[in-house]
Image (cartoon, rainbow, N blue to C red):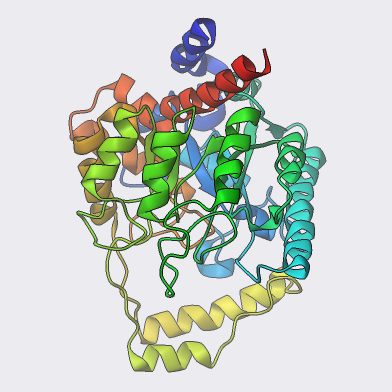
Length: 413
């Protein structure tokens, strides 16, 4: 364990090699960031804990290697923009929207999630010179040093496991190293923070407690984003390894059930865990009646069948609606308010970044991953040290991945 932590602490040194810097300098730099800050940013190992980009992998005509634009097809992550923003890798999400808690519902969800996991692996296999699957904390620095993007996998909503927890090991074998029990609605494992029906389990269900123990046994990092406050409290108390909130924010900045209050931020951090700051749930953003009507008139193409051309045609109409009836959006200053407040409560060892790219994230001034150097600039302006910023960008997350796996190894022995 001590040797592993030494490797992680030394990752920033490894990343400052000439090859690494040259690769990033060869890409167009985003604006509004001084050259010195961009150079500093490029020396850090940059990781985001919540990339919903896999939902695009099977779209006909869409490629991870092409440079896309938010205003053209709505996407926020691709290889050119990752290089422009210095994003070295992260957790690519296996997300399944919540459905029926029935045998048929579980079967469909299982098949969908396993297919999504396959799509992630196929994307990596199709571009072995650019991407590589990551399974351990040590893999991140090694893959980055080789000039490739490291691809961890995570599960958002464990509904696809049904009532068969052997499926958690199946997902582990595909490469999953982080998982959350629940999403927008309550399920068989736990209460959600946002189910309109309210709580049914008062935290984890009995099956959910077994889910938690199995995640610990396998070395899967437990993610409490989307979970109810009771689940957060129970996860902190019962997990054998520190936990993470992969894409959450500060309730003190915006009072929303998806955000964490100061007491829970402090509780997670003091237990050794971390809160990754989201770019969603930062302000109340209610559409005007006119905007709602205009959006209803241009329904989004079906996600499973739409081609890249279909999506671009729809996005052109969406951009026109946005111009005529501008949406109420949060901005970069509010995002940083959430991050800096969380840093004040949790300290730099308890904060990370999970902006929810391609899953609803993105704000004015932080539209896609090419804008990530702006965060480093603001953290430096706020007085955080290079060591603090490296911890925020990846050190804290890799420490948690290592901790979850270290516990699993101790149990196996």
